[in-house]
Image 1 (cartoon, rainbow, N blue to C red):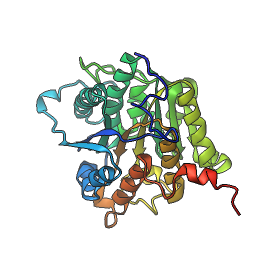
Image 2 (cartoon, helix red, strand yellow; image 1 turned 45 degrees about the vertical axis):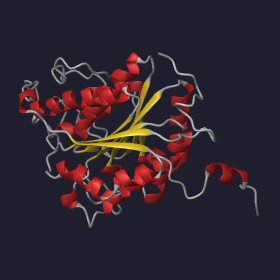
Image 3 (cartoon, rainbow, N blue to C red; image 1 turned 180 degrees about the vertical axis):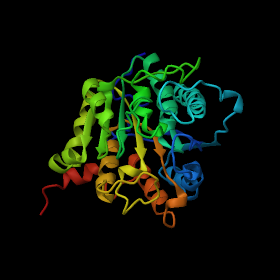
Image 4 (cartoon, helix red, strand yellow; image 1 turned 30 degrees about the horizontal axis):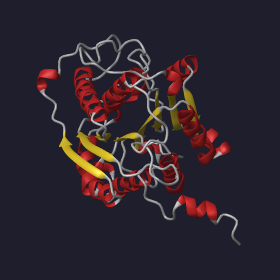
Length: 334
């Protein structure tokens, strides 16, 4: 299935930006992939921070489906060789979420999945990737994270599966039983963009180099800047008429502005750098699907991290201080 560029379904009537969107919000209260409990409370906290109202106030059609419940009948996958803690539970969530996000995409709606730890991306992106494959489109993934999440059961120092999500999606060996009989898709390693990275295990580093994954670490961002780096990715997706999925981990942000995460790493994106990424994605007109993951309200400070995630989501879906077209028009004014 092809898409006509510039169609009314994809673009607003001005500026090539995304217009009113049909969005479905789904909570995935999973913390089976993490070692620190608390991220299962993330969906409730994001709703408390007025995520749904914020998107509706921007003019979007927002359908909040509440939180998924995991049927115990799905928890049966056999663990692979190596270290993969709670593999059966993570596998069950992956199957359930792949089914849900695929259905939303098929219905013409953009899924926003509220986590929950980052292992949920195995399912959320698996469903989006299935839809992209059926539509004959290439799926690109922007992985905003402090960590590369490219471990396998044989390389992981901890065995925590939120650090394996990207590897699962790129078909690394050792995860063959993850989805069982549930239809799902994968992503090509060359279309995975790890952005904001500042913590990589030695086993991951070898895999990432061998697979040709695009790793945009903080050193690169310091040298070239956030705008140049994100525009390079945007240009690549648009040149291939691709679909884009954004998977946003709280630890992408510096812990001084977003402390509510169990895997904090100093030196992350600042408030303005993170907003710039979202604003440029909005202005690109790509209308990405989205994960918001690893928010741990137990570790947060008076909702600080949750409120920031809601603000970033608002920027991704069109909140602007001043219209981009007007900024361009007046750029030379004294």
